[in-house]
Amino acid sequence: MEISDKLLCLFSADVTLKGDEYVVSVPRREIDTGSVEPGETYRVALISRETETESSDDQTEAAATTKSTNDSGGPTPVSSEPQPPVEGGEIRYVEVEDIGKQGDGIARVERGYVIIVPGAEIGERVKVEITEVKSNFAVGEIIDEEF
Image 1 (cartoon, rainbow, N blue to C red):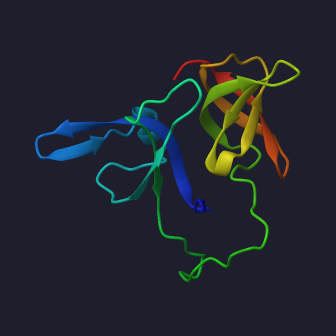
Image 2 (image 1 turned 60 degrees about the vertical axis):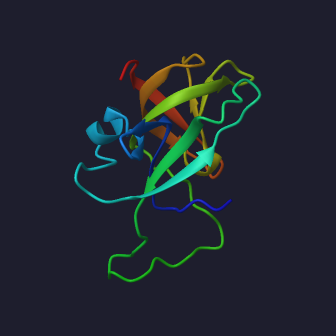
């Protein structure tokens, strides 16, 4: 499955029935971080989230994306090798999904890209600053343990 390089945010959400519509709620943290602006229109992708520990069909992954353009307003050229979806100094809100071999927290963002979070535990949601970026992983330092 191909995921756009212009992915703005990725989060888990329940699909709920409200009147004659089904609703996917955007977490407040996505608004607070500026990933999503109220009143704007976004494309949304729903991805089934069936894992070994969770097999509920109700669980979904929701991703808000926008059109891909470059500075001149034209389409962004597609590079042959995907670039990391984070940059050094960037602030991200992540959920730790696993613990690595050296005891560090592991979070995944766009396209399954790994952010290593030293000192974090499974299930923690933390605000991190990206301190190191490699082609296949980044390191994020915790700057806020609750969000």
